[in-house]
Length: 335
View 1 (cartoon, rainbow, N blue to C red):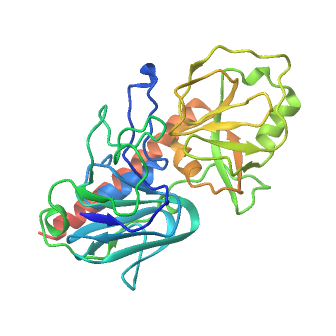
View 2: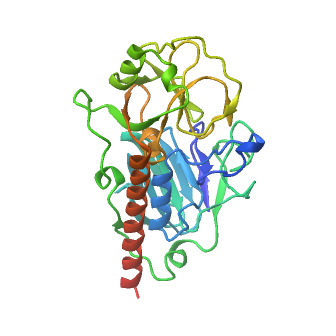
View 3: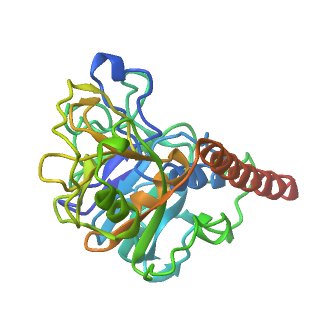
């Protein structure tokens, strides 16, 4: 068990999300960076979609109420267990009474705390994810608060790690150092996130100069951005004629353009339908990159094709397979 010591940290319990319910008006929710959550779970021997804690504001502190193995993935945070500095993308064993402090990230914006066995909260529509707008799932349908106590599923600590005594110091290479980056842009700055985008249904409705700006400019992530969507600021995108659409289904990654001409990228807590015209869609394989874009930095769009988007998903699957194989190798070395 763990006890939350931080207040107003906007941390929530998330797994891979609530799939199959968009037709009923229920959004997906789930981890913004599914890849980071999956790797944290794999390192601990959990199913890759087990529930963990998504942390977007820092510092974040918890107390371990029992011996327990854990991992921190996602944003590169300065974390310590008691007074001991600990590494990201690594497995650590905490003792009862230890306090974990996760500091402000040096890069990225969200980190994930995974526990051996996975966070134990009730399943709602097949998922443990928190749906903040609907106020259900996760821990009482809300963000975590000071004093909340969460349990891990099954045995914790040594018993949960492969059924063998646990050895600290095992981890993996983060995906940004292992996966091929999207096509580099000559004018891209260090504080820009590049993601691949497929043109969407209303793409051809936009004026040539607007399309040129869409691909050529860096789009600032505004403070109005959150788990519902990233509201971007940049050149005004104009259509060739008035476009009025009935509300229709949308998914995370869709880039809509409201009447003010400033794009919105729909994310994990977005509504399942909307009527704004769609200019593009961030491919699924790059949503984890998008999730780590900070407020005030810029996003650059690179046009891609459907075969390239499928290939990118295969690269992602290959990375997870390598992590899984490393964990199995570690497990076999312990016997």
